[in-house]
Image (tube, rainbow, N blue to C red):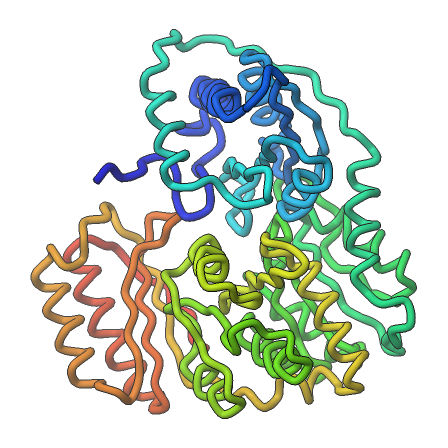
Length: 459
């Protein structure tokens, strides 16, 4: 079975200006996408594509080269400028474009970038389609050199349409928060959307990190670094705090007393509410291998099941579509409310939380406070290669031994990142000392075999 080399779990990603985000590969990528879309057309009409980007300094150049490649195939291209990734997915559906493309590396540092492609329904490309694009790029014999860069002018109505759609999610008679929200835009795409939306709705918001300069996206801010947002929420006695990532497809929250609430807390707040209203399809929520075991136990007490998938919102969505479920997500803050959007949308997640709190009269602390997550450690280990872990004897033996010793008292998940050169070790159990012990054993085995040093995030 052929495996993808350029695409990860969330599009094609890398360091801007370097393969595969050098000008030549980006131009060939645009040509390959344009030709793929041409083949899908059932009439003589030309495909139509909408293109957006986040706030990285490399975004505009990549967009211009990509646009030139796409247009070289006769495909029409419309430019949204800086917008969120789920905003591109919305525009693709709303205007019935053949595809949508987002230039973003999501939560990565500014020097990285990436390209995500959405189908007409707002879904990401299938793995078969991604392989077809990779083959086309490989077969393209065009010589490297200077590549054309198309001039791009944003369509101003695109942002307005997306904000209007988001505004319509909140019922007109919904009680609005009396206290302010604290909103961290990560100096990314949310900077263009969230302040405008909240002002239109009439919600008082203290906006943080909404002054992008091309290099400060995700820099000590946003959903990967929510501590400062949580401190601000506590200092302001806020209704709640929320932090988006660079392209605003994920959201991490904080209570007014400064406690972090991740994607598991969002599912904990939303699923029972959906179940009471008989809106939770299949009485089931879709999570991933990284979903905390405490959430599974808490949902079970409400008569709600949890179905786990591989890590990545594309796998969560695939299971939701396959089984007919309408709520799913990841601890990282990717939450999919399928009745509203098939794309994880951090701003929609915020709006749904506001709606649940407004309709139930609960505070955010009350909505999420009942979830007591089990101690969990995630070790991110830089690796020099991604050999199958089961093919490395010392690593596989260690994982098997730790899993056997821990038994049913917890969970161990070891996998490679789909977007970075990292191995991730997750251990969770009710016994915090066991968590630290087994995480350290597995981390040492991986470092000795294929790695360097590990950075640890404890939850």
